[in-house]
Image (cartoon, rainbow, N blue to C red):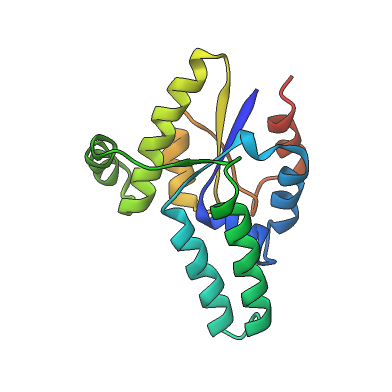
Length: 166
């Protein structure tokens, strides 16, 4: 069984319509929140996406408030989705990934935590798929051996295979 780790670039598509939103909605319609994982600090990145869209005039203040409320209900108030809080060791271990893959610190921490989580899942015979629109993060994750899905460039057929592996 595959679990899905959503970074902020992918998860924000659930709330703000943009390229790949339909695939994120498809994922959420078929996979229970209990099989989804995210980095808790990614919540701040998602709020920034909402603020940027509001400031650019792409969403109204009313729409911003609705999005923010829906986000807080799903991300903060509900506990079905696994939210990862990095340890000090994971943070310091991520520094090597910054240099190795030219990642920013948040992406490196996310990748380090995902690598640790995939090792835990493999013990149970499960896998982890990193869902992201960040090409550099996707490239680094693939180099490190993670399954990946980019909702901006990959197809629904590819997602369906990850949702229901053969």
